[in-house]
Image 1 (cartoon, helix red, strand yellow):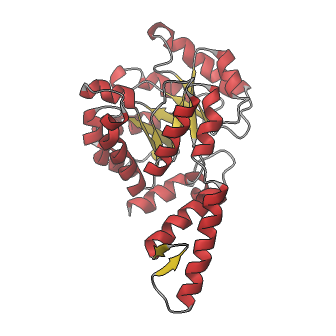
Image 2 (image 1 turned 60 degrees about the vertical axis):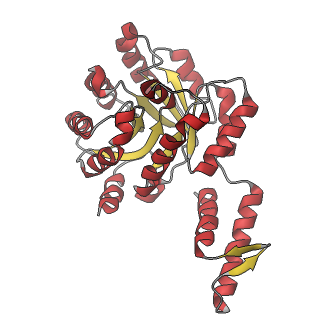
Length: 309
């Protein structure tokens, strides 16, 4: 029933999207933040081959520049052509006291963003407040990405998702794992082993509710080999994309979160072989030295679906 609600709500959104299924499957492999008070950088974002540009009101903007950022973001939305790039705006958190002003600014703007991102969403009560603010700004539900960035947010993740799905004016689309705030909250480190549990929980809950899980920022932006390694590992972990902080990261991330030619060919051959063996009355069968059954078929179909969507 929850999945049906999600699909029904999502039919209302998306610039140039013909169906809810297309909206839900929109690629968000690379998500890159741009300071909302810097029109030059936002203009640069419009020229990049990027899945999702996030015009940021939160961490990238100084406390005394929030109002200026709102104005600049609205100007950018009204004046810039982002082409195929999805236009997102990250607000400040509910707990900051700035969320309402941020959302009213962009949702009542002449040109709305395609999607909004809400950081540090920690509880069902905050999710309800988010819904009430959006309902004050628009008569239709609006697509939302939210960030899990704290221990309590991770503990409450299931309840947050259910509250958003059942709300009247929010369509949850993706969950972003905010690793830096999370490790600060648990007094841990950025070492990959320190966040395995949190990353896997984000992936598991996102996939259970048909949301896209988006992985952490790789902050060593000049280390492109390290970025490639972590992105490929994240893809294998179940993430659908990764946050970026520099244009040089975009092509590496978008390639890593796309099936390779070899993966695609292997998957298509496996699917054909499965159909042939099924027709011959066989269940499990051997394919290129591996035993194949239905779960393996579904994994191959996931690869093909990623390419076709």
